[in-house]
Image (cartoon, rainbow, N blue to C red; front, side, top):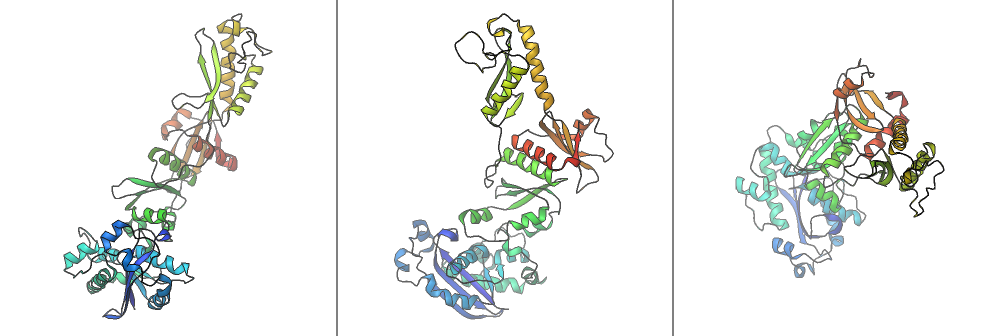
Length: 454
């Protein structure tokens, strides 16, 4: 087996918008170096000042260097049929592969990360950076942050790791079924291996253990693995992978429960890498209050965060249309419902009995308003969605009361849903969001056989 031990210096941290300024490749047959190649590269873009100070490579140094296009045939010759080895292999591989693909080449070789390999051979070291590993094992490291110096040190590190690999981890890491080399640098393979093949919600944590991404899955292990099935060169993808250090998860009885919990957790945590929740959120509500003269008033207004609405609407037009229906059906006053905002003291509603100018008592008028509110509430459905849980011996349950999401949990398979109070006690209450409510209602329409009307 031949190894192409590689190091690159670049103009920035992600391949899509940055270039290579230097590359070194050492071909190793497991015993010794049998071929090598190293050169500065003209990236055809300015090298940032902080990168120049880190690597010592300046714009003047690369001005007369070959472009990547000129060295691409030689690199393909070196990499063909070899194992691409680097310290944090996904970084170097993403740059080399991106540049080669832009020129029409197809780099298709196995990868080996010496960071991951070192963790298996020498677990529990304080640090696995190249500099610290070289100091710990007394490996000479010359010209730090230059391609040839770092690649030479990686050669000696690989030799040391292979010598101490008594359990043949290398064979496993390079096996056809192993996807370990595609994982983020700081993420342990064991975190993936312990994930179940059941529905649930997963959380990606950063170096400070802060949750930076929340997702849902029908099969947790399969979905999480899919995040790392490619190594796209975009800034967002590269930054995302660098910042993942740990995975945690919650199992859910069904995919629907996972969808609901994902939305709730994103709203609670607002993780860095989650996009805004898409979905049509209700923006208006119908509110009822008592004015200074004791009359109950109905009004359509923008949704208030801390004021419960009788009913929610997606637009003001929808809300006003519904309010006009109630005014007509229950002979309410257009002025007290803010439909008629004219200065004319006479109400424009045909059924108004004079509440707007005091000829109808507040008691009589309020009785009709209450009937209108009660009818509207009765039209909002109360139901539960009951399904067999994937991971326990109970039934999953999601409860809607009066058109609002109450909560979810698990009940015994023989549980009687007619016992509404006991049902609530069996479930965990969650915050109520429009998007969650829409998910549940849509599912109830698509799966009517799983709906228990209450």
